[in-house]
Length: 325
Image (cartoon, rainbow, N blue to C red; front, top):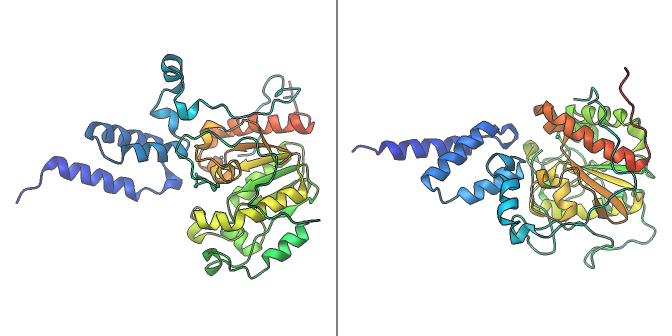
């Protein structure tokens, strides 16, 4: 019995696609796969388009500029999120990219599920009615409430220890990642591995020290094999992050990667759609940028992150060092 060559080719391509590690996603390969799906009318084509968009690869398959100019924005994208515009917007000119050398998206948690492309919940000026309010809350109380032996979600089964957070409890600048990795799980401190060292360099490029800021994650325990946090894990642990933010009351929050940004902004949009934009969040100004682990794999993105950090510096009143002539 002979096998249709077309079927063999299609099956081989789909198996290859399933075998790709999302952390090593190749944009050229994704373009070839999408073109293949278009030509063969694969049923899962729209789902893969959304998946690629969540990975920040949206522009390669859709010309948003021409589409918006000719036909106007789709209904789901027409709502414009509230953005914060500082008095001194940005910095005159762009400073050179410093020597510091942006994980992928996970599903946001919200009161109601959001359709792909739904507008971002930009303005969040007060806590939800479903969020517990703790009087005279502090980082010490939050850490004690979590406890060293937390078993609230399945992440406790493989973790070494709870990774709470580190830094200045009165910091004006707070960084939020997605979850601890291998090194963080062993040392009990967020961002201490390769990505953590890069984050430290980024902080120092802003003229600050690591001890000047506060660093935390959406989930406090390491996901097995460094996978992305799942919906139930985020839903269980993110209230403690919100309590940390309320206790610290930072002036600026920088979300590192799509997972933390989608969780706090309650959206499923890919980070490429709102990276570098300002949003009001519980009395702070929030901006999303690429995760340091992404920068390690994609060094050209350093320039985009540096532009984002310069906006943060402008809001915080930090001086951007001009290049020496």
